[in-house]
Amino acid sequence: MADFYVTKKGYKELEDRLTYLKTIARQEISQKISEARSFGDISENAEYDAAKDEQARVEGEIIDLDAKVRRAVIISEFDGDTSVVKIGFIIKVVNNANREVKTFQIVGSTEIKPLDEVPKISNESPVGKALLGKCVGQTAVIELPNGKKLEYEILEITK
Figure 1 (spheres, rainbow, N blue to C red):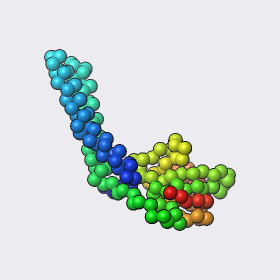
Figure 2 (spheres, one colour):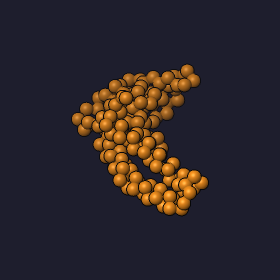
Figure 3 (tube, rainbow, N blue to C red):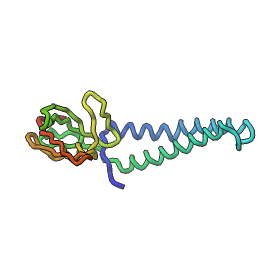
Figure 4 (cartoon, rainbow, N blue to C red):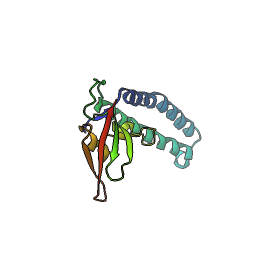
């Protein structure tokens, strides 16, 4: 499995969620299963089935988060260099076709929030991939699924 990038804050959120699931959520589900068993025959027990389904979902999430925590590469602290687009940076671009100005922050795939005031896009997205490594004044070309190309000129890079 490939590494993925995450901020310190995002890494802490992953760890906190994993700890919650391994401790509190597992305990709550165990209690639900015990209660459901006390109702008698589990072959036709909707509460038991629901609790077991929830247990499977939580265990799957634990496996997923555990793997992410092990593979996470924490984005290094800002070194003051904004000459090149890197993960964690905020980039202001202009669409060369319609002159619309947009601002994005490039983050790891677990931290995307496209509806934030400054949308957080994944470094793995087509736009994120195209912007990484570019400098102010350069143009990033994004291949769209329909075969067309989108061109963003980089206006500003900040942290």
